Structures are given as structure tokens and as C-alpha cells.
Picture 1 (cartoon, rainbow, N blue to C red):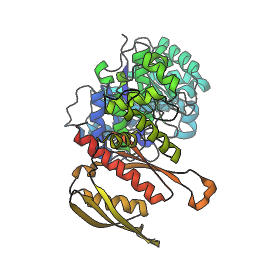
Picture 2: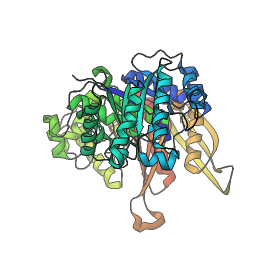
Picture 3: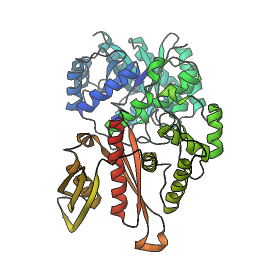
Length: 524
């Protein structure tokens, strides 16, 4: 198989996404995940831009990586400044990486209007910078910024910027769709033309997703001859993001026969996507191809029946190849056989016509009629089934809780909760304050239970949703609360329904904590 070098920029381009601010520890953790995934390159930051990246590179030198090589990122020398006196280049050398990426302008309009220098000086800046780094033993990737816009504006000059880098010794010429506005066929034709102009050179591709074509554009570039693909995990990046490696890698490797990462590493893809999402403190989109929780989820009864008999009916790959799994959603349209298959994961002895199965199905229909929805809260579904089968012992019981709310808030605190819970024969009474009654209730429950169940400290609430079910009843309406939780290894969702939002929240919160304790108890 043709080898494709995967170049990850989650720590540099991905860090430019709104809402992301990695700590040095965060970056070190992500490096470990990326190395386990088997990527070839990890672009870890711009040491000339901030002290945090300098600290990262000073600590990263001690890392023992199995697959990846770290690469520092920076710009060409400044216009009119001798290359040896450029502070950015001195920072790149201080980073201590064996490889560096240098970006330079390839669009004549950018040279004139942004750099405010001449076209000839820009070519000298590129050549001087690449030569300076090559003379010091560095592997150099030249990122031709705005290359596709430059080609459309002045193709001859765009090619001259590549020629300047190549003549100075650049190891890779990476073509950047910096504005993210190119179309796949444009990418293909231009990349193929560049490959013909620079035979024997490694050609890379770097796409942004402003037109929602970054993945398609990257793949077309590979089909045109590019052998290095730059992107980020989960498509993180500025504006609409960068090319999503979680889609590019399996598309190239599983569908087109290219070798991007080791086959066994590909099975870590979903875990890496989720881990990076957790570290970045951003939700992983449920509908993300290959790695999302909905990527292989089936709800319709006929679809489920077909996919059980012949997975390829509604699954384009075996989800296990990327470390994901099939989900059969529990709902009123799932069908009896679907419900039974899920029930048998809890009790294999259940039959289609057994009294227990009928009892469970009848109860689920009643709960759904009351407003419960289990397709998005399978953890609560499992707990309901266990309770009906007598295969569940609660870890704790609520005796009572009282909520006090005051306005205006003081230091973001406007609620306090007094809670009493019973664990076996022991009763625990505690008080907590929070930013809103649900936050205070969550804190109080944890405070009461963590001493007895330390694992609860690992649980973090990652999402909280409320939906009004019967709006015609105004303030007396019934609400459904969904709480998504994570312990850093997996995510689960639980549900509560009541005319009292606090009671609904408590139901979902209890299920969340008890599901965690149950899974730990069973060793899952």
C-alpha cells in the first residue's frame, strides 16, 4: 500500500479554535494519545509566540515517543531583517526539535497587502529561512500559505515560492488551502500540476473547512499525488476548523487502501477522538463520522433487523475497525426483537415470550408515555431493566433534600441544598452551595457520598438538557432532564421526568452516579 504521512496539528492549529486553551499538561497528554495512534508528525506549537509553548518544548524533550516526531512551527524571517537576527527563528532552534515547519506567503496579494513587502523580498525570505534551518541540520516542512488562492491569482509566482523553498533544501512542500474555499477538483488539478513541476519532492496538503470540504479536498490531494496530510483530531481549528483526521485516516486506509497508521492503532481512533475532546473541554459531536456515538446507531425496527442479519446493510464499515461499536437505540419504534437483544445483554436467559420480557416491555411503554426517552439515555434504560428483574441493589437512597434560593447571587452562588441520604444503615446529612439549585444539589450529593464511594469523584457532568413536554400546561408542565456524564474514559446519559425540574434533575443525577458505581463494581 502507498504510504501517507499523517501530520497532526491539534496542538497548534487546533489550539486556535474558539474556546480552547490547552495547558502544558494538556498538551503532553494529547501527545501521548497521538503517538499511540501512530501519526508520523505532531506539530506541537509555535515557540516564538508564547511562553507556554516554550515550556512545552523544554519538557517535551524528555518524552520517549514510539511513532511520532515532534515539529515546531514558525514563520519565515521578517522582511528586511537578516535571518540570523530573527527572534522567531532563534526560538525555533531553542525548541530543540529535529524538524520544523515554516510558513511563507504564496499569494502575491498577501505579500503586498499583509507583509507590505516586494515579491522578490518574499522569495528571499523563504529561501533564507529554509537554508538557515537546513544548515543547522533540521528537517524542514515548508507550508505554502494561501497557495490555492495564490495559484488562482498568479500561478507563476505561487510556483516560485515553492521553487525557492525547494532550492534551499525543504524536505516537504505543503500546499495550504488557508481560506478553506477551494473545491475538490481544483485541489486535485492544482496538486497534480505541482507534483509534475517538482518530481521527487514530498508534497503535502493542509486544508481548512470553511466550505465543509476539507476532508474531501485532502483526499483528492492524496489521489493527485500528495503523500503528507495535515489536519487535526475532530477537525479542531479556527473558524470552521481544519481537515478532520478522524475521517481522513479511515477513509484513506479502509476505503482507498493507503497506509496511514498501523492497523492495530486504527482501533484506538474513537478513544483518541474522545480523549482529545475531553482534554479540550469540548463535546465530541454525536454525529461525527466513524467516531461519534451516533455513527453506528440504529433506531428504526426494519433497519435494526437488517443490520443484525447483514451489517453492511446500514454500516459502511465494521465499527470495531475504528474502535467504535454498534448502538441499538431503545424506543417505541425499535421493535420487540431489538428490545430483546438489549435485554439479553443484562439477562441472557430472557426469551421473547417470557413473562419477565412482557413485564419489561409494558413498563417501558408506560414510561415512554409518561415522557421518558431512552434512546438518548441508555444508562437509565439499563437501570430500569435491572430493577424490574430484581438484579439491582441501590447504592444509596434519598431521605430528603431542601433547597434555598436567594437573589441576587453573591460570588456566583445563589442556592444552597441540605440533603440527607441513607447508605445501608447509615444516614449522612450535608449542605452545599452552588450556582443554581441543580448545581448545589449535585455538589451536596457528591459531598455526602464521596467519602463512602470515592469513584464518584471521577464523574463530571458534561451536559445538561431540559425539555418541556406539555407546554400547554405552562408553569405546571412536565419536563424531561437529560444529564450527560463522563469519568474521562467513557460517557453516559441518564434521564429524569417530573413536573418538578429539581425532582427530574435528581432522578437523572442519581442514575448517573449509580451507573458509574455499577460499572465499576462489574469491572466494566
